[in-house]
Image (cartoon, rainbow, N blue to C red; front, side, top):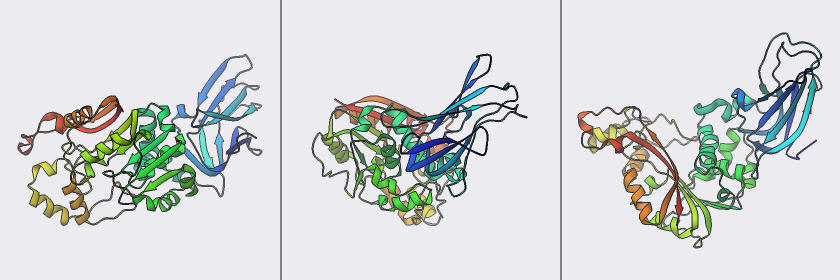
Length: 385
């Protein structure tokens, strides 16, 4: 036996199968390392992740991991496998399990991860479904983008963390469960996070993890944070600044006020003139339709349309709501946004841009510059001097 959260044993009925008994509500970033030692002393190492299997999380239950096999392995080959889990202070190894090859395999096979009866099916978990799953895009992918790509696993994510405009809270939950920060406050006046227990249950994540995450959800506005000065190590804003009706200047001022000197501010604002900026993609295939039609025709087509709900956690707002959201959008451009932050004392620390491979200049687009149209997304971390 090993960690209280999970126990690894051999399957008593099948050679080369490891039983992973998850006793915690959920564990994260599971990997397996297999060391193959042949009788002649030659050694080969294989990883579950190297085979393209990436168990971002496993809920409570019993799972079976079938090890690779190869008819080229001679009798007496030793298979030594270890399972590791992601943890706030680094990876944690569980007990190792060893097998010895006593008969030749009749064919080669790779890793296989499955569920025992009564446990959640692997195929129904978000990371197994990949980008086609809305939950995966927010709980798994977005959380890892923040943690690994943008913060480079910086220790400030284990300190005092604030999210301004948390929406449904799913990405925050993915971050908090992986990093277990000292404090995590998430604010949004629209209180979408109230549906979080229902969303978790629907996607086979035990709702009890919400309480375990320690996130303090509050219905506050980013324009008036009820928080002390210099009280956070990191502030997050994923897809929220463009939605603040009347402009985001006051929210940026509040973020600066509560962020400690040297603190990190992650911003992923919608860029109005880019291909993802109009937030009307559930009505139109043309990403620049809002720049090609006059306002009245655009409004008429939105109100007469039916959204495809491509990126929603069960939310089914009517076209009228979409139009209101569109009219409230702040027309953010990357160069202007960068200069605003620099003027406030923020300096770029790490950033990534996503661009469109080709932008076709139709006559309606001639009045817009190439940078504004070509940059679709900004992921940036800024350090407060």
